[in-house]
Length: 164
Image (cartoon, rainbow, N blue to C red; front, top):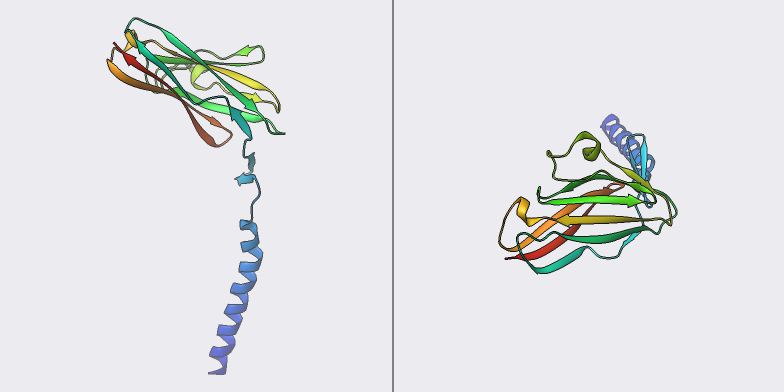
């Protein structure tokens, strides 16, 4: 019986030490470790996330500019851009660098599909989303999106229209 009690106490002691050693690693700040890569939660400001073009015709071409500003102290990596429809395209300007035309996943060429940019602290990117309804005629209220990642955070910009 005393061997059993000693074994239970020993295992309990090992479990408590393990919790103390490994449990303290669960405390996180704004940094996350993924494998060997550390990512920082981005601190940014978007001037808007939705633009409503109102009533338009199927032959109109409408564009909207979104301003994404890095208000943090570290660079933000902008990646994984894709639109929800082939009728929607986007370009991203960071300083003097302009991305290739971003489109729907599976429809982009290699350079557009893999385009990424580091946005230094204090710098803004202008994201232009262009909606061309005639490329995929749909009538009525339509919403199209541009999705991308800022570090490891999913973001979505939306354009809406009532297509006549």
